[in-house]
Image (cartoon, rainbow, N blue to C red; front, side):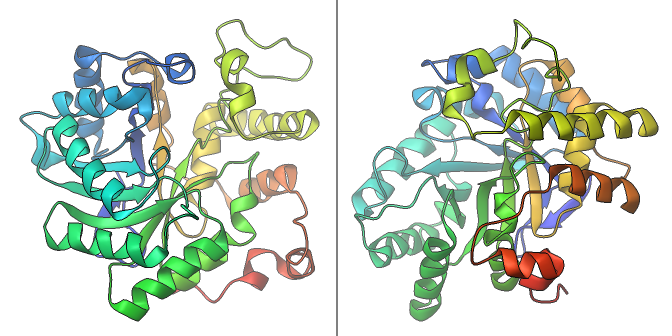
Length: 337
């Protein structure tokens, strides 16, 4: 396993991490993702730790807290071998009370005394950023949280929080959990340059485009009966069909050249992108997990990356498109060191 710094921090995380959204199976959305129980979760954790996947990501809203409970049970007796990332704030906001109460509840569900990475699941416009950040500072000083991050923030929201943290000497967000895939490259327009400039590592969610890049969705063929997209497509990021098929065609060709699967090629492309610290993979079965782990240990050639870039390219909106026309990420971004 390849280990990378999480943003501009001293924490090393695996290039692939495991998303426990498939644990629990409660509610209309998460029941479509998976219904892994404690016994199944223990087997998943076994495979992950054996492969060096030591970071496990969850959230308080995943299956109404059941995901955290099952992950905590699955890690019992080997907590020190793992890093736990969880998220708060999507349902209850990020006020001081919500964060303090939410962390205490998460610690109980996870059966642990610390959260290695706590990420705010969404920006809370009703709470001053100073209140949120000072509460996070207290949680870090108490040892209940080690590192903090954000998720699904816009560029100005993330930068406002980073500036306030710098101004007051509070912990900075070292991670931003964001959607990024070959059929969802909006992250590159503003959030990637910001991350490179400010030292914020991307933790990529839904790297297979909300299940569209599994190799089972193809031009001219009906959606497979077992696809979760029947139940979840409307809840995820929108994708233009023609663009999807263009990307899948390119993935098919490169998968044949590399003797890898379509998902492995799609994940490997992400692992080569600037600012990406860890790509979160999910799996409903042990076989799916082992297949996704095959994205590590090899690399697409520059020519293959260029073909995938071209197949998935979308010109960004104003004010980004003039810079993008001049050189894409390099034109928007400070030099990487």
